[in-house]
Amino acid sequence: MARPTNVQRAGFQTATVTRIVKESVDARTFVLRPHEQPITYRAGQFCTFRVTVDGEVLYRSYSMSSAPETDSELMTTVKRVPGGKVSNWMHDNLTEGDELELGPVTGRFCLRESAAPLLGFSGGSGITPILSLAKSVLATTDRRVRLLCADRDADSMIFGEALTALTARYPGRLEVRRHLDSSGGFLDADAVRAFVGPDGHGEAYVCGPEAFMEMVENALPGPGAIYSERFGTPVPATPPVSADPIAGGAAVVSPEIGPSGTHTSVSAATPATAAPPPQGETGTVTILLNRKKKTVPRRAGETLLESARRAGLVPPFSCEAGNCATCIAKVTSGHATLRVNEALTDDELDEGYVLTCQAVPDTDSITVDYE
Image (cartoon, rainbow, N blue to C red; front, side):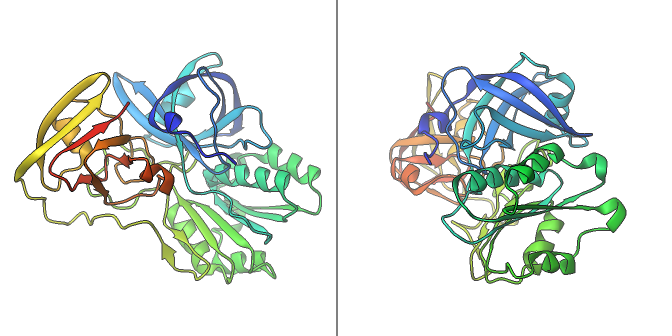
């Protein structure tokens, strides 16, 4: 399957909302038609959206509920979050025919080559990327797929019809088990282990609220691999600005849990209690953004995103935790080191792309191009 192109990763394009599907009492699927170019993605990935709410430009990332192997249309599913500016705006304001700004495709919550059964564990809207993965596996392999979906109550169940149709289409290969907190209490470790049964060697994909995910991860008996995607973000070096709890499809990728059951990741976030960086200035940082070129003195320990803001520019960003790739740019001269990288591939790093929210220059002078 093709990886997203750097053009797609770096820029935004307009997409028309062609249909809106009510999935549950508080979840909607938005079917999108990009205007400029097709969106290339892998099952399990997510897109960043740029919307203006009450005059404020906001960025949010939502998972695909479609899969490229089975769906000719691009779909993202968004759950209404109490107090969430973007999710509530999308639910209350978007109608068919409206346009959205659709941005970078990214995410590592993707399928690995395996013949083992796929075990999906979802809490609430965590079913969004799990559905995408299930569609892809069923269409392209002969692997069995077993899903354990926890929901608050019957009204909150997402993709009821879609999963029923998939089960009928793939009898004997797809099992979907629904757990309702309203009638059975919260899902617990014993229920997880009972569900796994003899499939401990299967590959587990887990997505949902933090407490749910920790419980599932700790309950899984192994020895199969575990891959997780979380709604929240790890502690960032700089606190994120205006962040909704992301429950409309997971927006950030957690460190993966490998076959040994231990967390593995590209790097670790800088603790929030770390001492402030030194303020000495040496060299320069040059930023190209929206046909503007600004140069500011380089400050030790300052990220490229912080330098761009200090230059008076308004660069794109979202999570500020190294997860979503909204702030991607290309270093054209000089070099920078990433504190955290949960979004860019090795090929993209080799081509000079960085996450500006995590990139700290380690040469006296550096030039970075958002174009």
